[in-house]
Length: 146
Image (cartoon, rainbow, N blue to C red; front, side):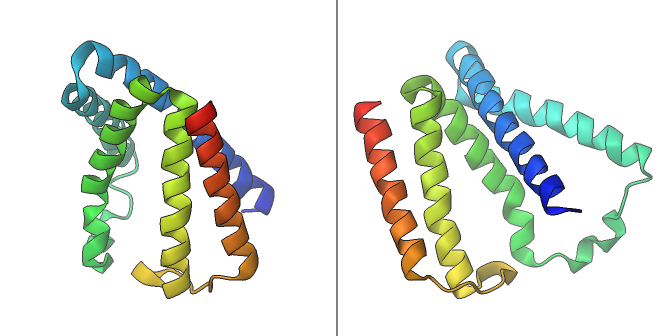
């Protein structure tokens, strides 16, 4: 894949996450957090099951090659989807996602710096620390004054 294609996929993912946050916030307000998470996972589970069946289960036979922590992604997905569902209707889309994305940056820097969970080591540098400071300032501005 070209860099453009990868960036385009990332942009599409970002748009989808934002739309999902708003849609789940609507469900959360009308049904509750647990219920909106359940509906989200059931619908997603049905669609990925159909895709896997259409592709003859894809590469699932290699499941034993996944490290133990890879299997926690489903539980982490519940936390992600639940926190989005809960935070968006209470903070608004932009404030909720500002905090969510900033938290991702901070954890990502730690993972990269130490090479945790099979990540390529990318040491923390001065410019990265400056970037985290700017992100922190942005979070403060959006959350306090947005």
